[in-house]
Length: 208
Image (cartoon, rainbow, N blue to C red; front, top):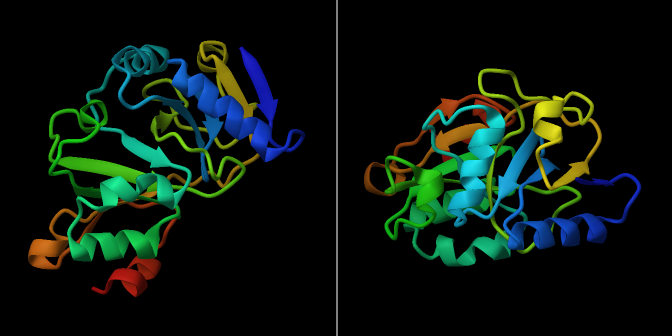
């Protein structure tokens, strides 16, 4: 396992290492904006299965696809309706996961049982600008809480990855999960999980 600390190495080194590892089918331990996560190529079935094995079991829950640059998701944005696209522009990058319509059934390994819905994220930070989208989930054993520190990641997870990126202490807040799938048709949205973005900030951006 290779370890890179973003407070020591330049951001370019961490980004390049992430892109290289993902392109080769590897699994990466990385700092998100709030908690540490596990990442792989969202189209690589073996790598996704390996993440489930590292976590201890496959709970069947969908995962988000994360981007490190808004430009990297421009093709996906073209699939979205006007209101959802505008909402994504207001909220991303940020501490939110947006559940959006997925008419082309992109990234089925992340969608799981319902390919018509996809969770997407865009975050800032030391990995900003990385060109590869990633399948991402929290870096913890199933049933255990996620962690905001590199030292807090259990050995069963840390020792099983190909690349570990130490981003120091994070906020500890998971992303707020916002369902936008009815926004274009009915003008409504809902919060599926509270987290790093407050409901007040969501209302300010999206309206009631």
